[in-house]
Amino acid sequence: MRKIVLLGSTGSIGTQTLDVVRNNSSELKVVGLAANSRVADVEKQVREFKPEYVCMYEEAAARDLQEKISDTGIKVLSGMEGLLEIVAVPEADTVLTAVVGMIGIQPTIRAIEAGKDIALANKETLVCAGHIIMPLAREKKVSILPVDSEHSAIFQSLNGEPRDKVEKILLTASGGPFRGKTRKELENMTAADALKHPNWDMGPKVTIDSSSLVNKGLEVMEARWLFDVGLDDIQVVVHPQSIVHSAVQFVDGAVIAQLGVPDMKLPIQYALFYPDRRPMAEKRLDLFELHSLTFEKPDTDTFRGLKLAFDSAREGGSMPTVFNAANEMAVKRFLKGDIRYLEIYDMIEEAMEHHVRVDNPDVEAILSAEDETYRFLSEKYCI
Picture (cartoon, rainbow, N blue to C red):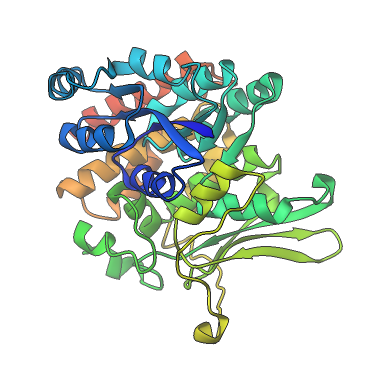
């Protein structure tokens, strides 16, 4: 029985993780659930999965939940203190981090310090703190198991292969709903347009990031840390069908790829059962139905998120944090209709140009860079 603490239980990855647990109830047990503020959803999860602990990040939501589940005897925690406590409970052996944002960094560090394996679906953890997370995981001898479909595909393609024989990581991107559009066409795109992803069922933030290629830039930074490769050894390939989830090219020219239908439950289940594979009752890939697979170069002149991501990664230090924070703020404003689509890139670029890079930042410096970015953009845009 593998015992899991799930951070971000009401989001897209969180609910699909619970589907995996539901389908493997004799082998997976949820001992802790954490969410932000959706009390009604968490109450339903608590009553079905009966964890020992639950954490609501918002204090008021925690008080509300405590009242609603007072008949269960389940311990209710709150805030960052609650997250730091729930990831280290002795009953758990794996923490799946599916929260969105910088909030995931400190709980991940605490979980590693407590000796828990990490099933990682929070991008900011490695984008902003990869230089802290990966050495700590090696020191504590815990596994970092990627949940993102692309990183899971790379992880699977590397399985059993010597790491020093890797020549290139081939990181695939669907291109999102705006693939092939010109900058002129993007000027009038709305949030509703950007949320129409052709292949994947994801939350609004990740879906917008997919449309701008910012998400792929964040994944490049993650891959750099996960697989210990240089930025020049990561190539982004637009693959509209989302069937080849990513691949690895080796020094002899061989390319090993992982293919499958676009379904996040596969990489989630793989991470939770690794190194084993378990049956899934989901749709199978039918090559006869596909007929063809196509691959394109990304248009980084139009979709500047990818280029800005590479720029921030090359500068390193605190700059990836600024890239991430500026994008996070810009996407929130875009979803509210406060800015136009292409202004997402402008806000990121302005924040990066304003920032004075900090080399090898600790967690305090990372959070400080995030706050500074928010303050700068708030003042500039009168938010």
